[in-house]
Image (cartoon, rainbow, N blue to C red; front, top):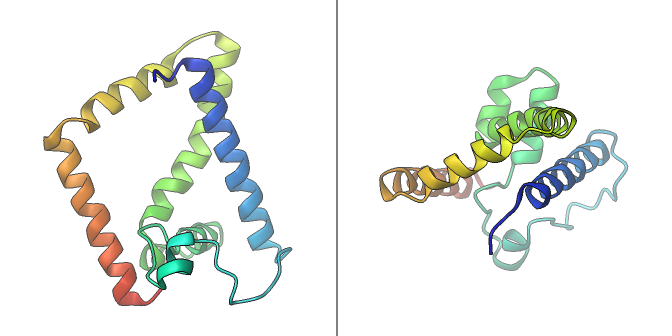
Length: 138
């Protein structure tokens, strides 16, 4: 299945909107404050944190300027926060200018990531982060 420009931009914008909504509810505490409720299905089913566990708390720490805490919670929070900041602006700019810069970047990045010399180190980093999350007891 080929992912076209329109579909990619829709998915990215919906994902960012969902992310901003999730952050809003977490920052403003407009959610059920029940510690037994787990959002992560992996952690809920296995009691083992997934590689992205702690990312929401990491991003919230970033918004408060606590960069060290954000890094300790989950380094992926930095990547996710950067994506959530850049993607809506880049997508909107592309749509208004009728250009494909984000789509072209996505295709080139996907081509590189599919190569083992790039994929393997990235997978190893995710596994290291996962092990670290397990050790931290997130």
